[in-house]
Image (cartoon, rainbow, N blue to C red):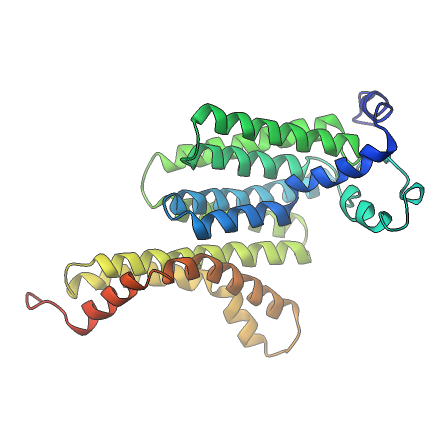
Length: 313
């Protein structure tokens, strides 16, 4: 039974051929590679809001695990209503259009809708640039634009993107509720959510390749953030004796994030799934740790504290 409500006849017939390529490019505003790039650049260069951006990244990982798992549970196909036959385009443009305007796999809910809702509304809630109204207005515009392109390209029904937005908003609400409890730092909570929902996807997909990579990335992000917090706590510790607890707590948590790398090293094969997963986890952890490690003043302060503890110890 089709999930459509006649949206393709209404939307696609009014779109000229030349505009199809533009729509295909605009849909990349909600693609995973672009959203990861946005989060990474902001995290590396916006030191003021870095912790909050890390928290948004954790919710994004959770959202990816959730919608991918739901796709496997429902198993609903995509519509067969392409906006344009790529063969009608000039040969130079065909590969670009096929790479950006087509999609495979299950269609419900829309991953682009989930991801854009979490990233853009999440960033709107934590960034300090502009006014709050402006930030949420831009976020709503970007989410609406991406959702429109998914329907216009014929890769999703309207209900797919509507439910996708609802899933993204619901997950943001859950994260916000958890963060209000303040039983741990914000990013640790959201990265833990990422691990949980990535595991959900791993189970529902029967350990698919993408699920293994997503779980490895979530574990790496969690472990990397524990190292970040451990470094901060060690640098701020008033005495050597006060270093023990953060080392035990954060160090143990960081070991959880090292699971993909440990499995990869134990595998022994030069090229294998576990090796690739270990690399994904390591790269994700480094992406979180490197910007913090660049603050050499903190590193030097920690080194001096360990080498020359206070006499009160």
